[in-house]
Image 1: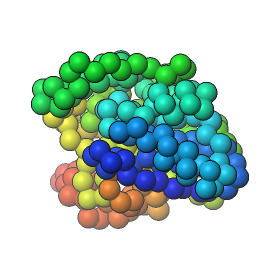
Image 2: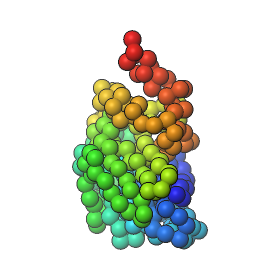
Image 3: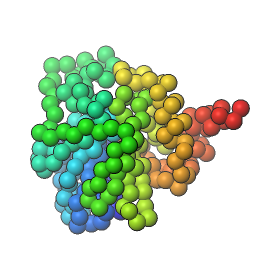
Image 4: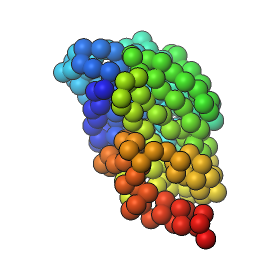
Length: 226
């Protein structure tokens, strides 16, 4: 499996590009801001890749800003959970008043083709199998993508649910601390320790490492055995 990424200039949001191998079709995950479609095109050219879909882990603007130029530039669909789809046209609905004021007066739209995701969907693209798990807490429509090459490698695209050493914030509109705890307990902790985690910000990690050192996961694990 070919996995490459770059941090977008604003908020250092990781944009992930994943393919089964060089010279094949690929998926793009979370194209951030400002417009990073040129960087995506350069990486695809470097590895001789052909994007066929853009996946969105959640509807915050720093993960969706370049969805339209990427999707419409390649003539491909974008995928987002139905709960967060409204944020493509109205990102301010999931932003604090401070951040919402920064986008006041700006106009946003969906790409030409958008497809809704739901829990337990399975997508098959570019020789990859992608399992979708609804993981609310950071936003109402946050999801996890488990991507497998069908041979011997899987990765978890965790968006802003799980980071190396931390978790996503829950104090923005549509966020919920209760939902995040439920997501961590039911969706993250049961995952295998060896699973490679590709987060929305920061460095990659593994589930096993986070179970050992991430204070949020450690506290949840310890509380289950009290």
